[in-house]
Length: 518
Image (cartoon, rainbow, N blue to C red; front, side, top):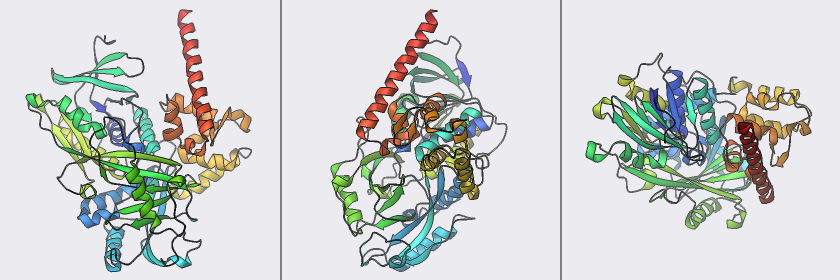
């Protein structure tokens, strides 16, 4: 039974806690709307924590004449580097040139466009380079001596979601993790919705003047529930495309990444990751459904290994893989036969039966999430009364209120303030939280004051913060999304942390139950 006799009334209810839902919640709440967001699992629990971690225009999209998408993404790259300088930073990409693939003139033309179509660009322009004269060994075959370099950026995707949700909450939004939409219907000028906590089973009723379907790979299924065909609903088609990645020990020195041309005209990235590793991805493989989630196939692993081994001086194999993950892109079905050719642009489908609106989000990429959110608010403008217009590109995300040029200075200040703590630990903590690292550490000056050390750079003090302030309720929320410490831990350390986490929660529940009885 519902716990609410008189449902709360929101201006906007958002279904889905990935990057698009989080971005819409932040934008809408910042405009003064009463906003709620619910996510049936953990925030960024699907595609938004399984990306290639790039803020980029998408160089290869130029081949498909996606000029507007590339220009918008390059402009957004600048905005994101400014509002999230703690979790996003510039990254130089090197494209080795090999005969038989794209000719040099085509690459030069594409890079020239990439340098100029995004408006004011602060990152260094592209250039031709000699790979055999780089500051450190390239790690590539000795016969690959020429290439090109250009600029893009890297981001911690899951943390970008969390920081947007924290910002939305600061602006008044109600954020509900592990809460699913059971049903929704249009009635008396609003959406009448029933929500259920997937952990406790508790249910509640809410009303909303508008809904946003940001369910990611489940967008089509949600759209059909919200807008039944027998009630006049018209549904867009979604094409689910899986992108898989593998992580291996560091393959090359230097802070640059590689973008490798493949013989199928796709590209594969090799990106420095978490100091000690190299991230390799991605694939483009049709996914039939989300019934069993997403996981990398043997064929995809072989594809990625073959792609990088065509370039590496010392080939790698399956035994080198230390971690693997896959995400599913819910792309708008434009009937392209090749999954790589399906547009990465977003499509917003508005349905307003009985003058009660619902916007469903198809497609999109993490780079353009902020602009997508603005577009959603534009779609809903006839039904919403906001206190101000677009604002989100000006205000820093939590922990990032400093200029990106001052990042090194901010980190240096943190290290000096906590001089008795490990410098590498502080660097990684700052890379997750920025200035909020000071809130986590407080007055701690010694490792003992940080509580239990779980290994991999994860300490009890940060864990408690993540549970209290960032909706973490399961071990994997912390190991793989709020942090990437699981990658640095042994299997035994991960098991010990999981046991500690569940014991902690059990003890907390016992204490709370005892307090209720008293």
